[in-house]
Each structure stands twice: as structure tokens, then as C-alpha cells.
Length: 354
Image 1 (cartoon, helix red, strand yellow):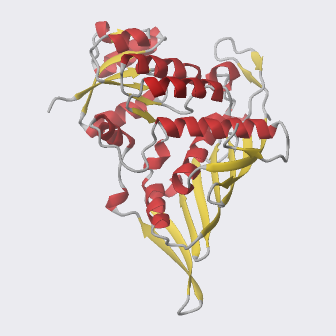
Image 2 (cartoon, helix red, strand yellow; image 1 turned 90 degrees about the horizontal axis):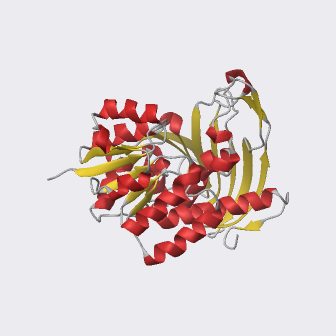
Image 3 (cartoon, rainbow, N blue to C red; image 1 turned 135 degrees about the vertical axis):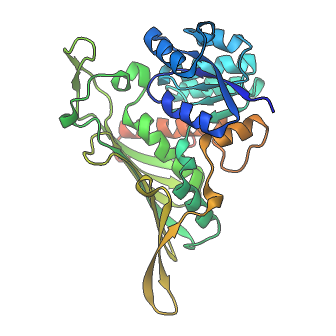
């Protein structure tokens, strides 16, 4: 079978993770790349043995080249929507990184366009493919802890904290990112809740900007800015389940700590990226009247990578739990409700009408 020809749009930073993932599947062949930075473009071109005529600075030219069957967009947030829109016009399948768009207004515009120009579209909510979280979904679906009442999700990183002296990069520029940690890490938390518990009903939020100046990467001069580096919120899902969320990039020692705790009438489930192949289950044993804690190893059935699912999408084999175009729109809708709520502390904002 002929390999699926892939074009990469944006080949800095996170692109290496996608390159490894695509290569590990074996179904794909990276045929063209695009980036606005010439040095990055040339470096990755050499890494992948991509000829200069297949290296582009304009994503439109790559999409129009007829050299690729699908694209993977790994760009800063402010160009997510333009790339998606152009893919719709050209009927080009896409895996696009999160957050879905710069803001909800862009998401609405794309949703209208999508009605006339639907394409195979996957949004990079990659934690749906963490084995432990996939196993949690399976346990919930079979009622392992009875009726779920509440949950807690947090996503913590530490690289933005003062001791690291992280310079001013694009992730701190609101014109490029829309929001700070909320869109970067919070979008993953929102998607995890959506994946496990269904749609949101309402939210109440608090966002803070603790660090408001960093040194420029280029000039080493101080750059002042205001963008959220902490966000917390509570939510009620349409099912009536309630949840709490917390995210920051200033939590020293956290590494990349994304975790979920779920509380049901019959027990508790906990899973984390710190133990991707383990799920902790605590339940009340009715026979012994004691609490039992089980360390459950993830079964093989829970293993599926983001890029394997991307390949399935391109073959028309989309399964349950797939992070599609609509998942991106709904995620952006909840982000908008959180932003609005943070401007009115304590007020619950509908996640259905934002």
C-alpha cells in the first residue's frame, strides 16, 4: 500500500514530537515541510531529507502543491484558523494543534465555513491517547465506581517559574496566543473533562497574571506583558457532575503533571501522566467493610496513539472518542465562558451560550 503523504506546517518546537509519532506508525511519509523561519526549515529539511523544492515558507503553496495527501499544523495559535480555513477551501485533511483557534469568534467563523466545506479534521487533544486516561474512560463506561458525583483535573508545569528565567517567547504574547496557560494547558483539561464526562453546562473562573515581565530572547531587554499564567475554575457538566480545575506553568517540580481524580458512589479513580500505564482504584468492599486500593495496569486494549488514529481518520475509520472538528469548537466555547467568568468573579457563566 502506498504511504500517506504528509505535509508539516510549522516545524519548530513541538514538531519533533509529531515527526516521531508519524514515523513510528509506518503508514506515513513526510513529503513536504513549511515554516516562516528559514534556519528551522533548512535544519528540519536536512533531518528528514526533504529536498529544497519541497520546503515552503507559505502554507498555501504547500497545500496547493499536490505533493501531500494531508497536513499536520503545528503552528502558533494565531494561524490555526487561517490554515484550517484554507484546508477547507482545498478539501485537504488536517491534524491541527490546540487550542482550536485564537478565540471563540474565529471558531464560530470556521464552524459556518465547515457546514459548506467539511473535511476530515482532527484536533490535537493528545491526552485522549494517554493509556491511563483511555483506561479510565473504559472503567467509567462500565460503571466501575457507580454514579460519578465530582472530579478534579489539574495540569501543572514549572518552566515559567522565576528560577528558570524563561525568556519572552511567543507563548507569552497575547496577540499570538489569545490566552496564556488557559489556552495552552487549560484546553487539554477542558477536553479531558469533555472526553470523560460529556459537555459542559456552566463555569465559574479565576485567572491571574503573576509574572508580567521577562527578558527578550533577541535583545535581552526586559519585556512587559500581561497574560494569564494561572487559571482555576469550577464547572457543572450537563450530566450534573461537578468538577474543579487548576493549571499553571509556574509550579516548580511539576514537570508535566496532568492528572484526574474522579469520585463516584462506589469508589475513586485516579490517573496521571506521571504513571501513564497505571490507574489507581479505591473502592469500598461490601464483604469486608474495608477500603481496598488497587493499582491497575492498563490493558493492551487501551493503547492507541494520536497518529494511529489520524491514519484511521484518513481511511474513514473514525471511532468513538475521536477529537474531531466539533470537539475543537466546543473546547473554544468553554474557554470563552471561562474568560468571561474571570471578568466577573464568582459568577457562573453558561458554557452553552457564550
